[in-house]
Image (cartoon, rainbow, N blue to C red; front, side, top):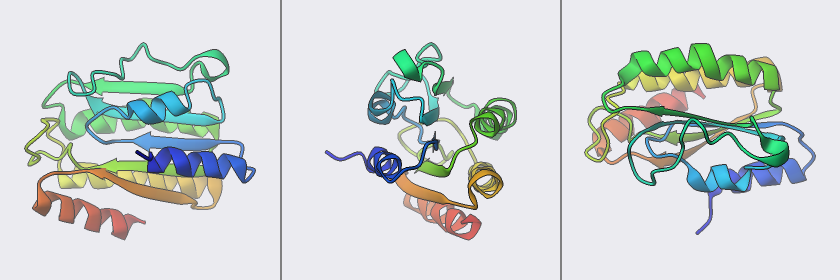
Amino acid sequence: LLNGIACAAADALAAGLERVLILDFDAHNGNGTQEAFWADRRVLYVSIHQSPLFPDTGSIREQGGDQGTGYTINLPLPPCSGDQSYQYLMDRVIVPAADSFRPELVLLSAGYDSHWRDPLTSLSASLQGLTTVAAQAVALADRHCGGRVVAVLEGGYDLEALALCVGNLAEVL
């Protein structure tokens, strides 16, 4: 298995970048991405995910280790959290952390299984709410790294909702 977002971040670091932000808004915690950069302060890994939910990782207490302590930010949400919770976390946690970190590249683990129509999860986010998250991430990239942002599709299991979400992401990009 290859972790596309982790490979992209590792390649960016190998190419000389010093600070990469990964914003993961898939409904599942990105445990592989988290593990890949657990001890690396060059990557700020932020995950908004449903808890409890497979893979049962991503506790708020999981914050990185060694040189990477504090560079993993897990933001687990209970089912039915919806857009207001996403917006609160973006405004109060993610944007301030990213502004302090000053990324040279923003990578998005764009998971649309958090949409209210998804059959596997129950975060209850709307099309507009998820589009707003993506737009705020693009604004961060505009502010800190000349608009350098890459999105990787991570999930979404209602095909109509997925198509709309991806279409909106493309428009935001």
